[in-house]
Image (cartoon, rainbow, N blue to C red; front, top):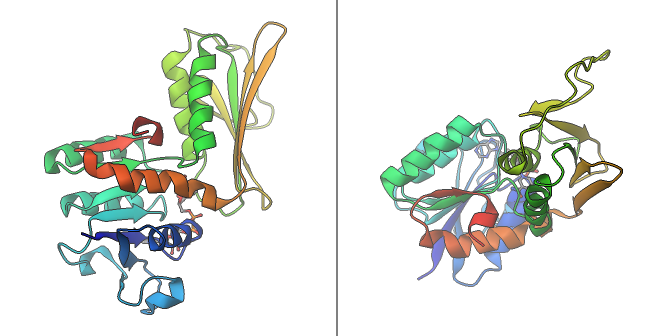
Length: 259
Ligand SMILES: NC(=O)c1ccc[n+]([C@@H]2O[C@H](COP(=O)([O-])OP(=O)(O)OC[C@H]3O[C@@H](n4cnc5c(N)ncnc54)[C@H](O)[C@@H]3O)[C@@H](O)[C@H]2O)c1
């Protein structure tokens, strides 16, 4: 039986890649798109002619879709995923910017509704491996800072990947003291702080999505870097998620946890 997919944010840069992915996946079909500003002309956005376009959540009927791909905005994503879970549509979420509390609430809801899904701050294999390697290195190099570089239109900072990297490093690094008498003569010049791990966010038109994790030791340094040069690179991870989330019975955070 064909698996039916709704793409939320289908007009956006990532949404269009997701539409193209599903259009080319045997056994899957885009049946609907959600966008507050789209015209009612699915083919204009490369959706099948039969696909329905909705402008808001209240228009979406029951039993419409099996999967909900979300590449929208930090403001929209929480309500979208809540709606999907309540309507037993399995979410595959790439949108970043949700708080830990929001994710925790959605996990509780997914368990209550017995609906599996995935929230992945990064669907790219290079970023997933960077996080894994950084977590490992943190055991030996507790002094670490993160620099993430993204395109100038990115709405949230730090990137979901940088924050996820910091969380994974924090799980593994030994007890650690940073310089207690440090003074900033220019406000925030040392970057954001996640449990003592500094995060620096760069926004420039030339970038897509890139991250460096810099570890400093005694007389040596280790730099781990990943570069996403093309948004298409995220689609392998979305494809894996679409193939695997119906084996889950709750919401999982992180692509690495379903590979
Ligand atoms: N997880 C990953 O691997 C990954 C990779 C790249 C980008 N992202 C994230 O994906 C998200 C989208 O990125 P993008 O570059 O496609 O942005 P974009 O601005 O190009 O697209 C976002 C789209 O969402 C639409 N939108 C806004 N509110 C909406 C709502 N309430 N319902 C439905 N659609 C709505 C907008 O009209 C727009 O078309 C961002 O949060 C970004 O950080 C994740």
